[in-house]
Amino acid sequence: MKFPPTATMIRVFRVLAIAEAFSWAALLLGMVLKWVTRTTELGVEIAGPIHGAFFIGYAIAALSLWAMLRWPFPVALLSGLSAVFPFATVWFERWAGRGGHLNAPGATAGEPASARAGNHAGEHAAVPDSDDDEISARV
Image (tube, rainbow, N blue to C red; front, side, top):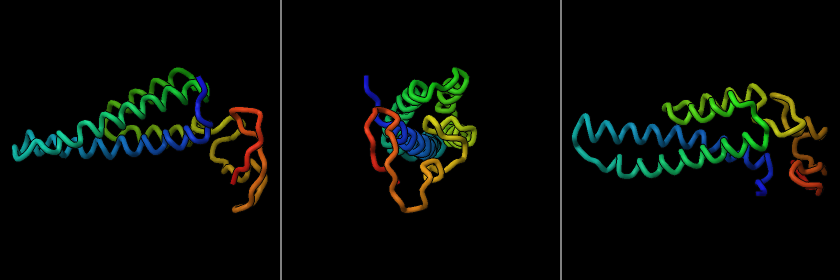
């Protein structure tokens, strides 16, 4: 199976981590409206499937990054557990980013991509793509 480029998967993972947290908030609000105020079930009916889709997308992205970035098992386990608790995916995404677990191969924690490529902001450089032997233009 061929994965998308590592940088793309990292971006997708980060977006899904935030989207999953927002969908948690919407689902929690829907549950309050349904069970506490007993006014409507519409919030759960709408937010439930949306949250489910983001949850599954986050899980697939986390499993993909586990394989692509060769995360240690405890990091992969923590990424999965973070999806179970409300808003923990944002915490995990921040923690993993600071710890260097969301860096493409050859990068160091906190180092911007432009510094790795040795170029200045806005310049393009030809760098090898980590997923194949082709050269691609990166910003």
